[in-house]
Image (cartoon, rainbow, N blue to C red):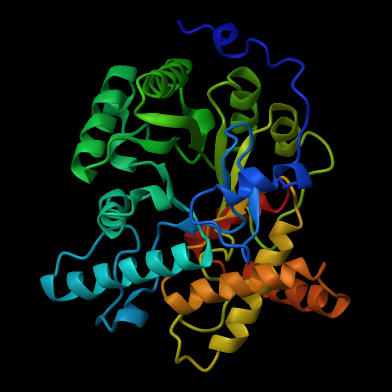
Length: 359
């Protein structure tokens, strides 16, 4: 059995630090990957990495509206139709290129095709992006994978497929309701993450889950291993006044990446295409949402799934607006109204997001 004491040594008196850059941090910030003075950077917790205040989520929901594909494409799997695959991969290269130009410097990978798709998009410029890696079918959501040996074997296979020597963060994907995992599952996960880091296959470690209480327990029990946490945070999310997940994030200096900032697009009226009549309205709501989320200094970065270069530019504009100050009363009221509509528009398979109104 892996002892929790092994991975908590020396952290009982850790000082609380903010994710935001202070004046003394500016030299380190300027040395980060794809640095752009027009982008803001935040410290990814105890990893010490300075990542862009908005990063790229790996999903490509509604990309068919941008590349002209007929019918909706799977947002988690690369298309198999050769006629669609070429424009799809060109779109991903263009979006990654615009991210690099704009100073966005981390991609979070969370689908079975994403690691290979983005590894190809980054070919020849790997060191311009940080990669947070996961591969659902190779991780804890599959019962047959729940041993440290199997998880490490599958990580090796994934790195080989992607032609990667290492990833910056292995943020292993657990069950959405992580509390359903047994203690043996937890020990397998912690052992695999810790071993992969010691072997140089990843630089830092963490996990994703939709289970707040379980995530909090893991942070408190294994803080040397849970360096990064990936969890939902939307335009309607706020810190729970007591017993918050953020209490553990503060105490143990955990880097945070916020998934579903736009609640699976429920906050929008349009379809994500540049030519849609509601495109300007949706771009404004996207900026308001990102600015609201960034008002929480314990969120290192929200990670929207951007499907066009124009959406990347909109993220960069959101950063410029965020620099000018907090949301005005009018903007706050507008976002509140949109958030109420967003909750009402959640599809049945996303009703669980309401559980993340208070974090």
